[in-house]
Length: 473
Image 1 (cartoon, rainbow, N blue to C red):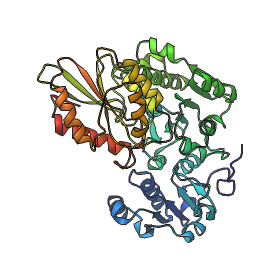
Image 2 (image 1 turned 60 degrees about the vertical axis):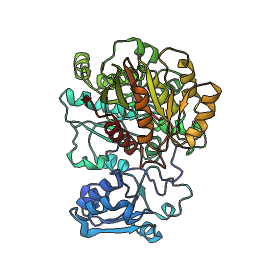
Image 3 (image 1 turned 90 degrees about the vertical axis):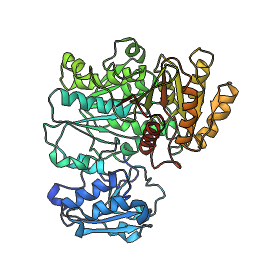
Image 4 (image 1 turned 90 degrees about the horizontal axis):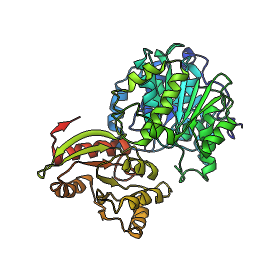
């Protein structure tokens, strides 16, 4: 299927080579605070472009990034437009680099551009590296990171980037035909590659699919259609690896590559590849990763060895604190802030055999919170059940009546993480056994935090301030 915006997303690469960038007028739409826009700006400055960086945020909001860019090599060729966009910066540019979450539809500025790219499309157009691409609704960051960890453990000089908050332009010049690259790709990033012929992964991995970003997409079908773009340009010697089930059957029937489907039930029963990662969902993620590594020719024994002591990645069921209560119990604190959909929070809740204090809530993304409410209701009458602690937000407002209808005990919503943790400490004082405190919001972070990673960092900082630690990770 061709891109409906072929005049701004034409097939092929934007630049014939790195030398082709020199002297080009490049507008980067969205400077941001998470590194994506900044890395794009640095990349084009390194290669001699005339760069306009434009953002609707003002100088005060972007100051740390702006100060760093003003000191970057080539900054004499950098111009900032802040607090607004100007049409001439789009119509007059050779290439516009946009953030993946910015829609082309209805965007007056992008409609003026001659050519629109993203950091991922520029990377794919210039690199010679073999690519393993990962997408999905749940577990894609863990799966992508596990694949990268396995490649490095097997002796490859490998790189990891994409939606995992590392722009691939930050390492493009270091890649060769012998340096595999693992790209975590969101549905938005894939959408911008439609019809371009740039993404031809040796292995395309699709993790669990659930409803997500339904405030952005008109239907679940549109969302999944963008996910399916990960294998659209694969060939018969490539691999598509997905989760067995209804969506997996669709992917298997469509993919032009060889297909492997991983059964979640079988993965849950098998010995864990990474014993330090709790939860059946992580067993599934590691099985998907191991299949990708096997497709790359890595022996099974090597795969088992590199995962034996792997503890996962920050913000995904990250164990960072242990606290001894006066009553003799031990509370283990987990940061799972990257769980931004209800199903992910439900999986985290069910990952432990000991009692769980779940901290959830946040901003709605037009999602159904019933799976989380049902998971909590299913545990409500068990001896180890503890009340749910909630942060405020539009998602919390949808979750609360579901919990009330199921008679699930609730604490909050609290106005801040600090206030929530102070109340939690008063309860944990009386815990005589082991328990887990799991920050798995099941919702987005807009409003109270810059993003989900800032949310996770605040949680860890506040937990350390309120509880101190007997063991700190």
